[in-house]
Length: 287
Length: 287
Image (cartoon, rainbow over all chains, first blue to last red; front, side, top):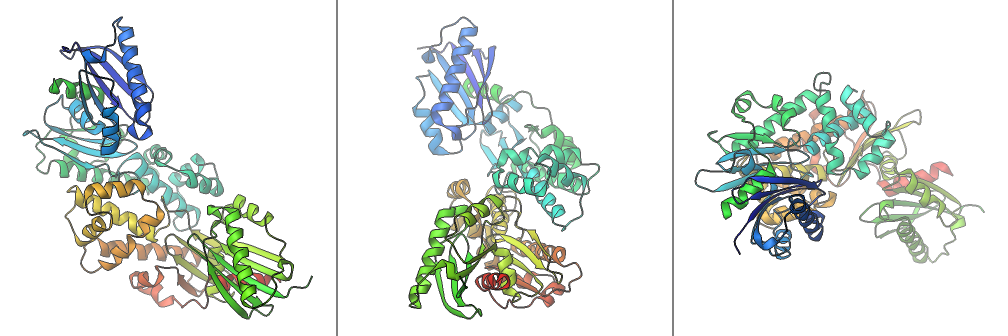
């Protein structure tokens, strides 16, 4: 059956964005819904995605027939080959399906499918590049417990360590430590309880405090400078000669830009599109 | 009923040591068994401990009657007030019971109950001091996700981050990274899977690799020096004037000693006893 529609999906741990387009890639409608990260369940991801497909077709007064659709998906969790396989075998008969990481669709969106590099900095962090010969490379993205440098969780863990040292007298108190204690319940005991439960998202919620106190806390400034150096290290590994266009993406991209080394900051270009548009490019390229 | 026996217990996540002594504190027998950290279950902790009590009395051909015993316990997890309370209300009718953290009984054991300071470095890290006026203070011990500086888990997380950077080209390869990859399955994919499961204990298993490569890896040496500085920071917060005797305890104490700042290394004295002996001192002091 000939393809009549293209669908682009950006799916993560907090939400999903989906667009319905014609075969030329002109977007007819965009829908948003709940999470579809593969780590939160394969079945749940497909329910979210097919639900949003149905919504998009309903909104356009069209009939949703998967066999007539090519779907491109950039999903969180695709780096796990078992999850990716389980997701693909449960697909409801699309005419064509292309699945990749949300890092790669972010890259495709940022440079409209052309060669380039991105560093995405949000709760986690990851870098990805597409080269002129069609090859690609990922850097970082090893997870929050010991990696994800410069991410929200990474900034939060450093802010937490600094707060611990202020609370037990290893370092002088400061506005950042005071703000962290306030955020985590207002006392050392509350902070200890908070730490017992803290995951990636909880730590990432401390990152705005680091940014807020960049001027008045002696620890926040070197921490942000270190984050900038870590972003530079990711960018340099992706493109040692610095010839590719580079975009900074993710929720912390804008806030961290002033903290990048000057030479890197000069090279940054705005992203042309987002991960959902990149997912549409992914399926366009394949059809 | 008059006390006829004293019992000292050191309980942690991997095992328990218990001694049975007379009322003068002369140890009659020592028994070892499974874990009794409160975080692994209150009921399970009591089962382990009363089982070891029974074993100790059996071994001495004596009858175990809790009412005739004073028991001192230094247990992992006592910093959580809810767990400590739940543990105490389930106690099987001992004549006297004193419960404290294993950090405090380590301190009591190290200096035979006299004023002093300890820094304990194992899977986690914590410092504790007892002052001449009877007051005490703890430093560190905030947990592995963002604290526990210089601990095995802390060393392992840094080694892991360094390995990630070697694998994706952010830093040159080196013997430490090669050893970590080997330990974690032998490939980047195996390492990624390992990271997805890694907890405090898994990270701490990388610490010996850091120590093994202190001479031939350019990253291992500064990391161990940084660990030494973190131990110094704990010691200084406990005793800013450096007048108390200081012992280094825990599984990594000996291996980290050469990496301490010279002035601190000079001050270290061997521990006089362990946490089990400290638990016996805890109950002796109370009776």
